[in-house]
Image (tube, rainbow, N blue to C red; front, side):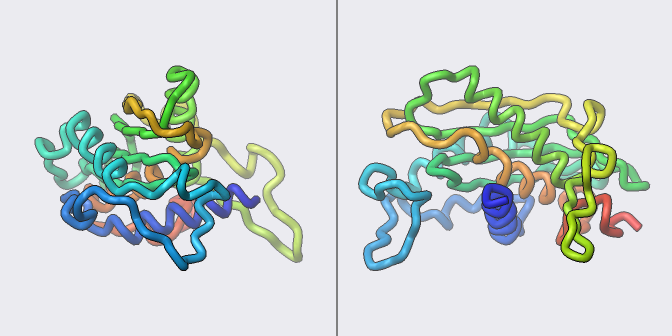
Length: 226
């Protein structure tokens, strides 16, 4: 449950920060620098801040990579076809994601493509790392579409996949591209960092395609499309 809480908190953070689904405001990051958390109670995922500082230049780098690889600046959202973006530092790893969606008039959603750029420091096993981020989009798709845990009289109501469905093959992204940056920084997390920015970018893409802002998840339990 602790990890789930981290993912929900980080995703909410991204939904708040990425209100503009048609632009990427790199100027908001300012010049590349190490953030100063002196006299600030910043947990830094339990890692030593001197070893794992918060570097805005690394975040900017993955944003620029995913914008280039996805063709962000060359594509325009239209009615029923949208693109969403989000970026985040999660478990000491810098991730930026662009999600493309198609939404029909009756609310059916298709995800043709996802692009994710990752700076996880020194990556020893690139293929295993790539697989983690490919899996993150499946997990994230499930969260957005149908991932809901409810309790009644202190008891969780969901018991198995019959009432807590995981995204099926026709619901997950058709194409997922993962770009791993070369880095001399110490290794960092790859198990969960792909989920928060994907969920936020997915929701921003829905907004870009429909003009309807996603405020509650999962989609299966709200009336976004009536």
